[in-house]
Image 1: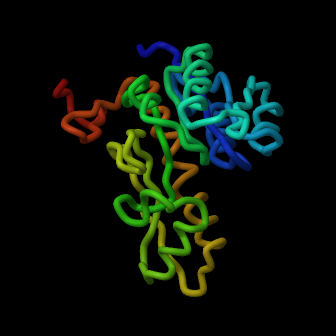
Image 2 (image 1 turned 90 degrees about the horizontal axis):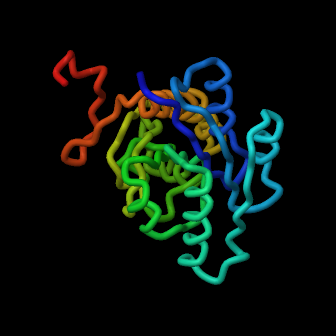
Length: 217
């Protein structure tokens, strides 16, 4: 039986993916995981209110209060250590930190990206920009990807993906909403559950699920 995992969620905005995690936890769907702190990169974002409404402790580590990425990373590492983070979830966290975070928490940081990596990912692809690019390219299918975070932007081992149809007349906004509802809000809690139940393993850069190995472990 896996031991309880302390989940720290990093946010920069409204916190819709945070809400999906909170709702999943309330339904008992995060396994041994418990959200123990939400850390925001700026004050006043609605994600902090979501956390407050559910009694989850919060911290604000504001980027502009630090002179450099290195100094900001120092502060983030100190907070994560103090919170005894077992798993760190990027839930719309838009602030740059350096590679020391990844080195301190290898295969213990998860991000959700609103496209089917390796499409429409990497530097500059975030938020509505991802969906704008997908529509400009004329793809018929998009989706979301949950992956481990590495020093390569959107380049970490892929945990799960789900396809979402692009419909005639879609705007970036309607497509963003459909990808969130049909993919992001389902994939992220499930990936967190798998991690917290010690079901995920990274072998040669590929994520394997213990529950899918048919007793081969």
